[in-house]
Image (cartoon, rainbow, N blue to C red):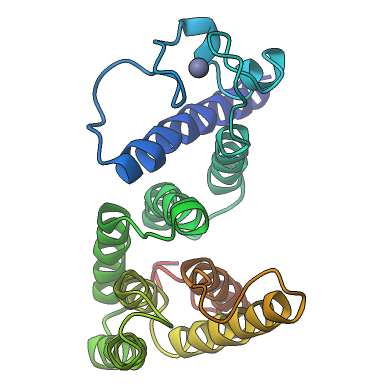
Length: 252
Ligand SMILES: [Zn+2]
């Protein structure tokens, strides 16, 4: 019984965090402050409590604002649900240690903000990358193989930095350079190298498909942040499987 209650509580907490992340993503993009009452992004009407219940309000209102009747983005329920399920995973599945749990509880929201911001607005918010960088430094310290880990992160970020510099930001944004530095620190050597390769393969494949199907043109920028995150998750998963190394250090 207590387990069910705990599960529901964690899920609702995840929904609430997801709801906050939506505010961070939208207001961050518009350069607005985080404080102040929640309002409709289209008409600016202040929203009531019933209109702010995660997921529920979205479906009850049939995807429409009650004031201006214009449609509400799928981003809202998707981010809320993604965060809720991620939190269930972090707190219910056996994590190697409480440090890994705290790292994931902070890192997953930061990664979600980066994923959605880059997909929708082609920007990677510095605040979210900073959280991942701090977690990465913690991970490097906990593994105590500083030299390999920091050299791998610098090398990978250096390669992306070169692409950014020589393409004048066409192939790669500087946000991508900072992001891969942070994720490389989190993963450490050799997983960071695998993540880098996964990111390039998946990004290259999807990019080629988008060009071939005419969905994107050569001049258009395809966000690379989502592929860095995808590559990092895959590398983290495989490295814990094969090398018995978790992304946040050998704290087991
Ligand atoms: Zn409205």
